Image (cartoon, rainbow, N blue to C red; front, side, top):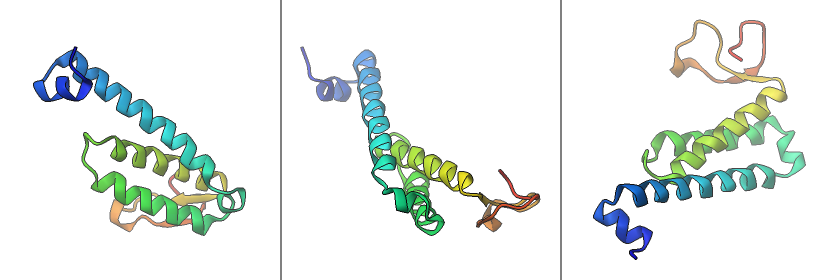
Amino acid sequence: MPTITEAHSKGSPILLRLSIILSLATAAIGVCATVTDVSAQSRNDPKTMQRLWFEANGQCRGGSGDNPKTHLACEEREAYGKRLGQLGWCYGKEGEFGYQNKWHRCTRNSVR
C-alpha cells in the first residue's frame, strides 16, 4: 500500500482527500494550541493582540491556498480578532474601503 505522500504524488483522489483532511485537522489542533499559548496577560493587552493579528493576517493573505499553514494563520487571525472584539476593539468603520481599515476602540459606526 502506498504512503499518503506517494499516493498524493500519483494523484490518487481518495488518498489526496485524506491527506488534505489530515493536514487541516493538524492545523486546527495547532490553532487551539497557539491561541491558548498566549499568556493571560497578553490576551488582555490590545496592542499585543493587534500585533499577533497583523502577523497572522500577513501569513494568511500571503500564504499558498493549499498549504495547511496558511489555513492555520487564517484561523489564528480570526481568533485574535474575536478576542480584540471582546476587549472592545473593532477593525474598520462603516463606509471605509478595506485599505482604510485599522484597529480602533469600537464606536457606534464601527464594523463589528
